[in-house]
Each structure stands twice: as C-alpha cells, then as structure tokens.
Length: 89
Image 1 (spheres, rainbow, N blue to C red):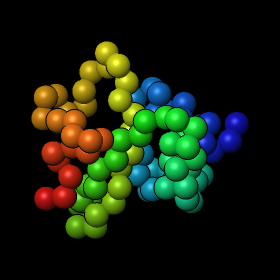
Image 2: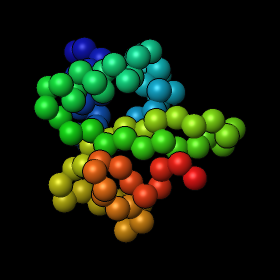
Image 3: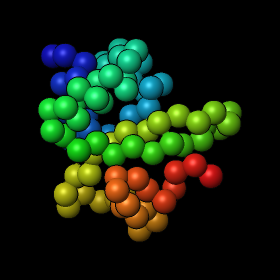
C-alpha cells in the first residue's frame, strides 16, 4: 500500500495528520504536503489549519470531514471555506 493510500485510509477513519505524525510508522512519509496535494488532485476534500506546537512552532494539520462522525473539538470549530476559526492565534 502506498503512503498516499495509508494516509487516506487513516483520514477516512477520522485521524488528523501533521508532518511529525506522518514520519512515524506505518506512514514513513517525509513529504506530507505532497501526499495531501495528491489526494486533493484526486478529488478528496482535505481540511487544513495551522496549529502551534508546545514548543511554539507553527505546523499544518490536515484532516477530512467525515459525515456523522463526532467532532474532536465539540462545537468550537466552524467551517469557513475549508478553514477553522482556530487557526493562528
């Protein structure tokens, strides 16, 4: 199974990705943004936001909206052109 297929499968289960998570097994992906681009070109809708790590760095987080799945953030997220209100702080 390709990296793109592994990432897609995990996202369809509701998992979220950052570059750091993508490096770990089983994904072993050094270029997550490229794999996300591949998925978008195939027609998948991938949401993106910038999050701040505990060390203060800003990284992109990617996920798919899964219909009828419980939100990881309750009602605190609002959809606005694919971005959330919790982006940069």
